[in-house]
Length: 197
Image 1: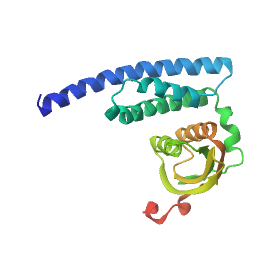
Image 2: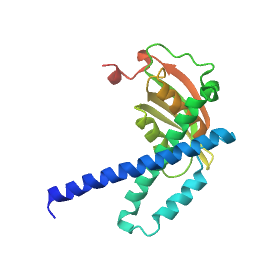
Image 3: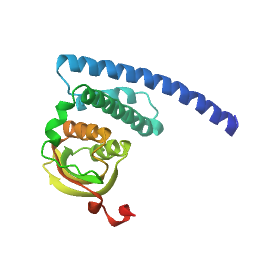
């Protein structure tokens, strides 16, 4: 098989994967609808995700397992984000407490957050990945120590808090991490110099 044939087959597989992922997202929506009806809106279930990763990792050749499971983690992360987005749309008041005492400037450049995430491999990377997927940049990170089970961080994230998608992100982060708090929302004057240009 030559390079063009291999790339053509990859393109075909990508279309099949897209169709499967859309079907999976349909099921994620069904789960979110059930959760809304039942009142149990907890989306993130670390124990369930751990079982899924373990089960799906079985039988995958060792030289591909890490790469494969990284893709599976991203699919799970995307599914959670989609469910949180739906739940927010259906009940924006659920996140009202997050923004109660926060002044959001008209020209918003970012937000400073405090949170504790599980002290496990990839937990902080997942927080940063979710923020990056929402179009946010990272301007700073300060480790605040931990208790063995959780690690604390202060993050300075570049984003526009006036956007609904960013409010949905804050909602997701608040549910998936302990002691989540919006410490400050800042305008362009709070940006690092290289971001102002």
